[in-house]
Amino acid sequence: MTSPSEAPSQLALDWLEAELAETFDEEYELELEDAQLSLEISRIYKEKHPNAIDRHVYFHSLIRLQSELIKLQDWVSYHKKKVVVLFEGRDSAGKGGVIKRITQRLNPRVVRVVALPAPSDREKTQWYFQRYVPHLPAGGEIVLFDRSWYNRAGVERVMGFADEDQVEQFFNDVPEFERMLVRSGITVIKYWFSITDEEQQMRFLMRIHDPMKQWKLSPMDLQSRVRWEGYTKAKEEMMARTNIAEAPWYIVEGNDKKRARLNCIDHLLSQFPYEPVPHEEVHLPDRVFNPEYERAVLPPELYVPAKY
Image (cartoon, rainbow, N blue to C red):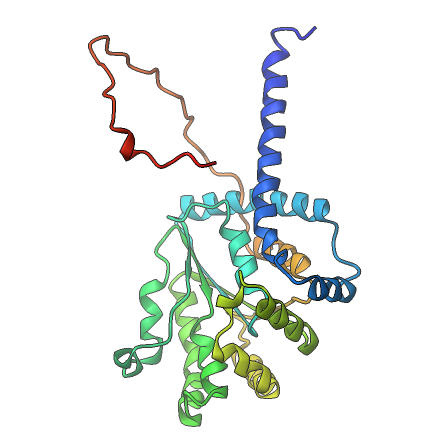
């Protein structure tokens, strides 16, 4: 028989077990994005990834890392740190997947994602970095750029949206721009997600055959297959000319999506000397009951139909 002193502990364990199960369900929902495949594509993909990480190992590792991300978020918020993380890489390299897992359990008021569309006609006449500056963090914020000012060194250059003079100007300016950010107190971390030609081809095929993912394919994405070598040369020059001590590049091996997510998050955490910060104790106040109050009955048409 459970003693009164043991009961709260057992209740807490039962609650944690239920919460963990719900967390697995939530993560599994995200993983279903790979489930809407034709059987043939699914079979080929599994053959290409015979050493995929065990799902339970992945889930447990991810949840542990996400709990550390919460500590990092609290530390950044408490000490008014400013953090910028850039995610770059070829189309379908896995940038969006890792960003989704980083932000999944964090406060959107502290950690936000910036994914800018193509520049407008007005923005094309501005200083190149101008449209990115308003999105930089204030104290206590982390900003994740899903593609960034490095568009100029990649897609804009390869697709001919920027001429060689503009690209050269970018390479001259970007190291000093990032040094200015660092001098202002912003930590700048840059990730490049690297995948092979074969892996990108497989992921594009998955998107083509999955109606849930076809929206991810744009004419620009398809052109990236045609211009694979052009992107490779552009990436190599970009790395050589913008890998500065104040804001170095970090390459994430992305062929295995799950391992890439875990490795990237683990590395991101390692870049900060975060530690637990003081928290005010939270107490649930007593409910105030007014004996004169009667809850109004609302018309049934205001309610969302309970179909499930």
